Image 1: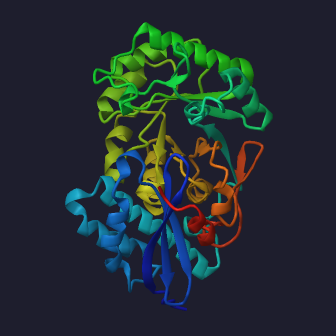
Image 2 (image 1 turned 90 degrees about the horizontal axis):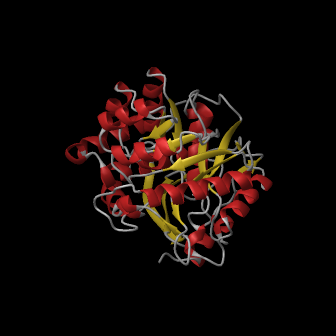
Image 3 (image 1 turned 30 degrees about the vertical axis):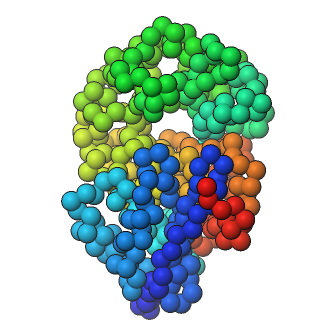
Length: 385
C-alpha cells in the first residue's frame, strides 16, 4: 500500500550538555509520527540550526519515505556550497526523516539500510582522560584511569596528547589552538610527554587493552612521522590523523609503523574519494551526524570497494550514538565504533532509552526508529547555554 506520511513541521530543540550544548531536529508528520535526529554545533559546526530552519520549508509537504528525493532537492539548493554547515544541516534533516520513516513502518532504522549484519558493535572509550583534565579534582593519574577502563569492561580506549610538565595536566592540541602555535611543530618535549602518558595508560589498562591515539590536526606530515617513529615499539591499535591533503596522508601512511585512521571531518562522498584512490588510510572515519546515515552508507560502500574499513566519528550524545550504531549494524566493513563515556550527570535523563553497552559492545535494539529519542521535558530542565 502506498503510504503518504507527509512532513508537517520541522523544529529544532536544544539543551545544556555540560561543556557544550546538544542539538536535535524534530520532524512531525500529518499522521502524528515524530522523527528525531541529533546534530552538532560545537567548534567548526556553528550555524547548523540556521541551515535547518532555512531549508525546512522545502521539506514540509514531502513524504518521509522519499529520503533520496528530499536529499537531491536540498543538495541542489546547496550545490554551490555543499560542504560545511550546509551539508551538516542536510544530514540532520536526513537522519530525522530516516527515524520518521522507520517508525511509520514499525521497523528499526537498520532495516532501511539493508538489515543487520551484526547484533552488537564493539565500542571504544573515546577522549579517555581528555574531558577530565578540565576538572583537576576529577582527573585521576593515567594509570588509575587505565585501570578504571579495564574494570568497567572496555577492551579499547582512545586518548589524546597530554603534557604533564606543569602544575596540572594539560592537553596538547595546537591544531585547535591549545596551545597556540601556528607552526604546529613536534619537539622532543612533546614526544617525551606523550610517551609518559601512553606508558601510564598501558600500565594501568594492561597488555590486552587496545589503545588508540588521536593526533587530530596537531602537526604537519614531518611532525606526525616523528611521533609515529618515536612510538614504533608501542602497541597502538591505530593513530588517527587529520589533514586536508590526501597525498600528504598517503605519504605518512606509507612510512608509518602503525595503522592509520582518518577522514572524520570530511563531508560528502566526493570528499572521501581522493583518499580512497590513494589508499591514504587504513580505516576511514565517517561522521554520520554530519553526512547523514543514508549518505554514510554510500561512503562506506565506496570504502568497501577500495578494501578499506570504516569507523563512525561519534563524540556526541546518546541519540547520535544510536544513529551510529544503526549504521554499524548494516555495514560489513566496520572496524570499531567511537563513544564517549565521561558525560554530564543528567545525560541519561535526556533520552527515553540509554544505549545498552555491555562487555565493550553496544547491543542493538529491535524497536522502531533509532531505538531512543529525546525526552522533551528533560531538555527543558537543562536549557542551552
